[in-house]
Image (cartoon, rainbow, N blue to C red):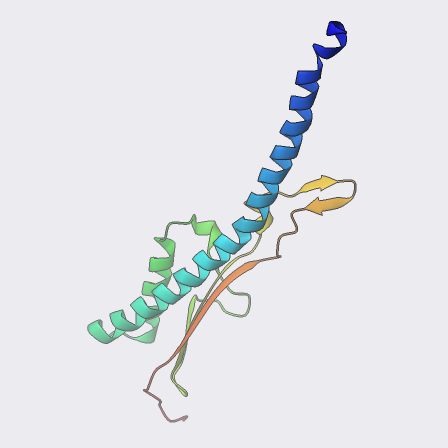
Length: 147
């Protein structure tokens, strides 16, 4: 009887290790996009607020403010290739002077490069969004008349 029980502990450890690793990867796989989404949203909000204050303090032009916001996003905690402008814009900051709307949009184009999914029996785990977006908008009281 003792010869059959010698290997049972290692087999039980192997099964439990696989289950625990799958559980850990699942937790990380589903919380990472949520954490990244919150981080991008916070980055967009902070840079929008900072850009507005910077423009008012320095009496800067819209182009200078867009460059300042891009610099602030470039100096953020994330690598530079993780933060890109949204698809419909070329700049992080868009200013519409006709209705006084400022918008900052930051996105990560490929979240699967951060946490690569695992394919098991044709299923991809975890299913990540195509992109992670942080968007902030602010209405200022300054409105210029359309020419």
